[in-house]
Image (tube, rainbow, N blue to C red; front, top):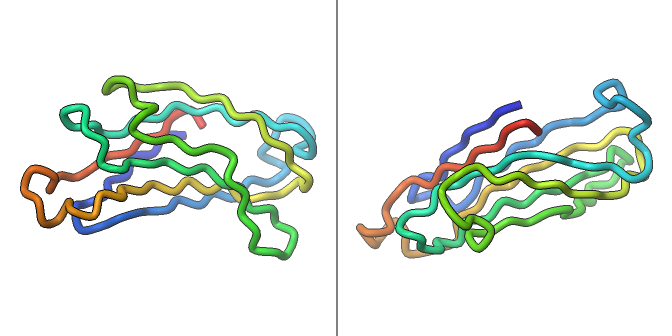
Length: 126
């Protein structure tokens, strides 16, 4: 799967939600799981504008509890290129929802012309 999303200067975050069910898995999805993906986000002039990618899971067990299993920031973007990520987490239920949340926390973006740029986030081979 490939995804590209933009966070405009007047926006602070966007969220993508994808349900994962047992039919999508090669083997039983209960127990230790590995999530592999590639990520990219725009870094202008090596400045940290508070770019973050959070990866969460929400088990389909009737509660709304979300567990953060990974978090990336501008510090993780050494250079403008694709980076790979491997995360291990425990799944106690066969069905769950995978959530990717994209954030830009620099509050001066809309007002400062130098920071008034669109930030692009991309994911691939999830």
